[in-house]
Image (cartoon, helix red, strand yellow):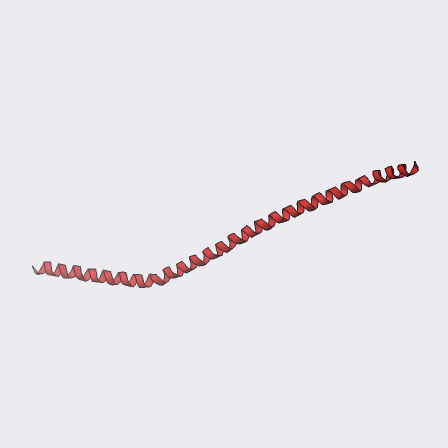
Length: 98
């Protein structure tokens, strides 16, 4: 009968050691997990900042493209008018001769 009591005592000791080992493991890993969580939060913050900067960059790019198109059309119309100048001058000279 003493083998049963020894087995039960050994089982209880094993459970106590398991519990102690689990507590030790939890105490050891808690700072690591907290550090990982902090790192993940930091990375998430940086990703959010990058996303907002990308959005702002896209908006600025759109504004620049619109501005370039406006200036391109202005320059194009000015060049067309300059090309027409000799013809207008010829017509002006003809009208002055009459």
